[in-house]
Image 1 (cartoon, rainbow, N blue to C red):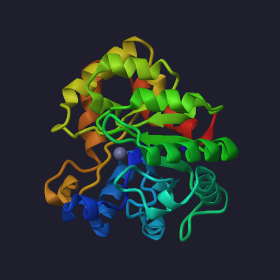
Image 2: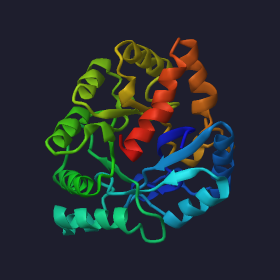
Image 3: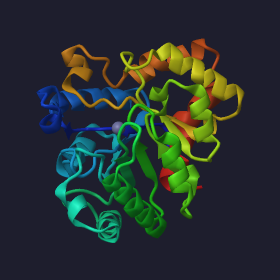
Amino acid sequence: MSGYTLMHEHTTINLSGVKKDMDCRLDCYEETAKEYRRLHELGVDTIVDVTCDGMGRDPEYVSRMEKETGIHIVQSTGFYKEPFLPQRVYESTADELAAWMIGEITEGIPGGPKAGMIGEIGTSKNVMTDAERKVFDAAIMAAEETNAPIYTHTTLGTCGLEQALYLRRSSLDLGRVVIGHMDLSGDLDYIRRVLATGVCIGFDTVGKKAYLPDETRVEFLQELEAEGMLGQVVLSLDLTRKSHLTYKGGIGYAYLIETFLPMLREAGISEKSIRKMLVDNPKRILCGA
Ligand SMILES: [Zn+2]
């Protein structure tokens, strides 16, 4: 593993039931394969697929994609957030959910490989609900037991600090915990407070300009580079819709490498910093020190 890693993607995902929008069913296998092959040519050798139970996870689909495109895809265990949590979360204790995650990490996901990530486990907008807290408790137990990393979902960056402080009460190495979607908070001071807890954060919605202009992402990263904080930042796009792919007119996965990296370089961000965010930090998070 020495190429780039995208730390937060979904090879296939289906949130169309809850969202009542068929665009949220990302199942265009051939188009995704085409884009993954292109990514491979651009130097991406690993994708962390954070699609978990309740999000339309399909380990066989992802394993086939991995074989056919040559990109290593890390698969995940866990549960997302309300209202996407499967019935199992409501009917089980945190211990039982932890045991299920541990099984997927140590023995394998049915139809797929051993899970290499716990995620994306999430909170709702401005609140961590009881069911979401139960999933966090289970994830902490599973990570303590297996040493697996954790990747979270925040809704528009909210509760990022609450998540970090919650996870800090455990014995986990926070350097291997990623608080997701922190770019979407749009608030650099808040981001600094989250980083101060010792966790890593995702600037993992690169290209989602309707939520936050990429110029703002670049400015934030410039500031964080000056403050020596990029050892705690990872990058990704979080494409989840058919319309995000190029065949439907979207930005496509290559956008991060072909458009966003040139913006970072233009802004004076060093190659060393880019390597940190796309190579060194992912490696440390996935594999340990
Ligand atoms: Zn997410």
